[in-house]
Image (cartoon, rainbow, N blue to C red; front, side):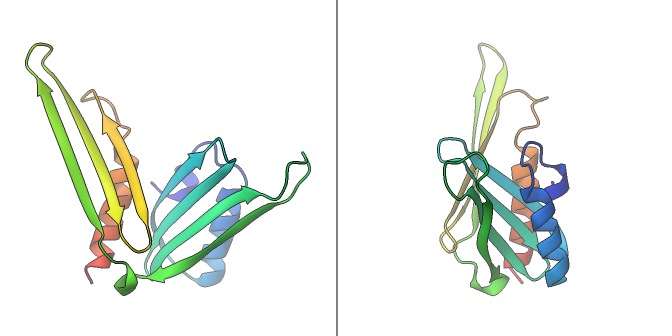
Length: 140
């Protein structure tokens, strides 16, 4: 998925797209994690020149407080310990499968997880698309 395809991320989408344009970077895939308790998002964008790692959060508790996007671009040769892990189960009684996927990196610190319970469940698709883009670039 690309940043434009993520639902429920508000104004951060336009700001990320604008910054990618200013940087002249081509977006390959994106992943957004929402921390509802802290009121912030972690936005990871795999680009042709590196991994953009940002936090989108509100500056204060007032309803009209401004929002900030803070982060940086990590060049692909500097991404360390990137790996994709999977665990899958098959239940013979119900004839159902369950798959768990994890994208992990040591630097920058990344721990993303998605679970697929039904064959028609597409929750792992965005994670796998992002992982594929990162793994292809990090190995170059």
